Structure formats: structure tokens, C-alpha cells
Amino acid sequence: MIRIFLTGYMGAGKTTLGKAFARKLNIPFVDLDWYIEERFHKTVGELFTERGETGFRELERTMLHEVAEFEDVIISTGGGAPCFFDNMEFMNQVGKTVFLNVHPDVLFQRLCIAKQQRPILQGKQDEELKEFITQALEKRAPYYTQAHHIFNADELESYHEIEASVDRLQELLEL
Image (cartoon, rainbow, N blue to C red; front, top):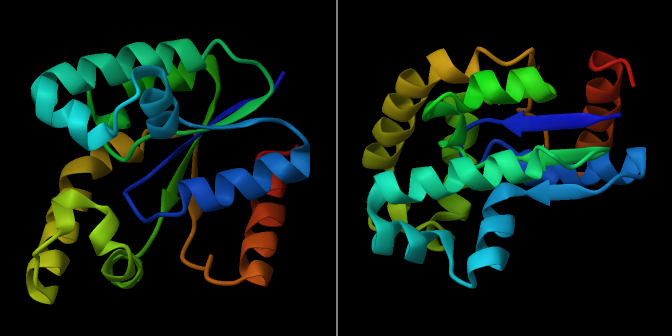
């Protein structure tokens, strides 16, 4: 039975790498944020606004426990999911965890491109965005680094880089 949780900051490549890895292993891929949106017929942003951070994080935890019952699956968590409650400890107990570690400069480049799709980043100038990323990474590092494996995900910009990363991840996890 395979149950792998991909964790890391927004823009780390959890969905990109997770989908490609699941395809290679011929098992389902679940993006926790998408799962939540499907279940509640609202965006994560809407749920966050409606329930506040505490309410959203409680909901996220419940949904994490739900998807953790799936077998033979790759699960991409939201960037903040490992940092609340006992989520990281829980994921470590029920599956293999992988922290997709990405250099802040690479995250900055990726998030500049995706800024419009991420409400929390909208309106931030370049220097503000760099500072925002750096501070968030420092705050979340103690949680992310509890993962069973730390995987460099700096190179996910092309099909070939993604495929090479999938191969490296498969080797790391001995699958």
C-alpha cells in the first residue's frame, strides 16, 4: 500500500510533481485543496473568508484525515496544512511524507507568474513578495522538515525536468 503526502510552500510543485508521480505509479492523485473545494462547493479562499483561519484549518484537518484513509494514493497538501494541529505528525504516522524544498528565489519566480490566482499574493510588489516568502518559509520550516524525506524541487519548469524529478522521487522513496 502506497500513501505519500507531498508538503511544501505554495509554488513548490506539489501538484505538478504529484500528478506526474501518480501517473507514473498508476495510482490516483488527490490535491487536498481541490478535494476540499469539491466537497464544499466553494473555493479555499471563500471558505477561509467565511470561517476565518481557525475554522478553515479545522476543516482542512478533518479533510486531511479523510483522504488519509485512501490507499495507493499521492496526496498534495495545502502549503499551511503541515503547520497546524498535529497534522505533520499524523501524516508521518499514516504514510510517507516528502517536503518539496525549493529555494526562495525559485519560489519568487514561480509565484510572480501565479500571483493573480493566489489572493494572498495579489497587490504585493516584488520586494514585498520576496520578504513574504522568506518569512513564511522561516516560520514553516520546523514543520516541513519533520517530513520523512526532503526533496529538492527547484527544477520543475519543463517536461524533462518534471520527468527527471519523478524518477529521483521514485528512487528516494524506493518504489
